[in-house]
Length: 302
Image (cartoon, rainbow, N blue to C red; front, side):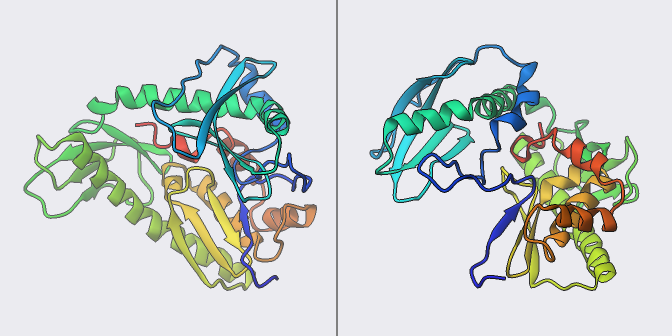
């Protein structure tokens, strides 16, 4: 292992050529990988210029085969072109010496992925616009593959789950120590805090199980709230697991944990790596395929 911690993220693609048009693998999978996700969603997306731009940023548009794509361009000292979709739309960071033609070409090449992410962003914004009625008494939240109800009780000192904490059933109730008229932000923050507590407990237990089975050790592990990855493992033996995995069932949670544990032996996504995953978790493909339908940045959709 190298002395410098090398990050490997879940579902990362093979390294791209090290030239000026290489796109950071942290944020943009190949165009081919996004084709399936976008084939049924080919409606035109409006491109909105942000109301204000940083001094070192500029707005640019490029004509892709699917439609025109607008983006905020920033120059930097990085060695490759990086593409990220966040709440402000598509952000492109490129080396100072790369010509605009190569930047445009990179955006066009990744157009299916970009548009799929922009559609997910648009859908999330639409859902958030109607979410006020969900963060309240009688609302509900996805938890470990089930849907649990929310109740508010200002007479309590702490949240109480009426059910088996790590083996919930649909309709189990999470009672929060909040008054009935608590605003949505307080309800949301309380629910997130409880979910993160459950994630820390359950993920830690399952991680320890697989480490013992494989007779491996790690330097440390922690929860993350990354918007682009479900998990990561660095070459120094540190593992991160996205707390939002707590929305999914046990099999999917186990898959992500096993994925990162396998990286302790194979810091790549080679056939040897997938053999390690399969040895620990036979039939992992179902969970992998199910998880690929979701983006960490869009969960929970409430």
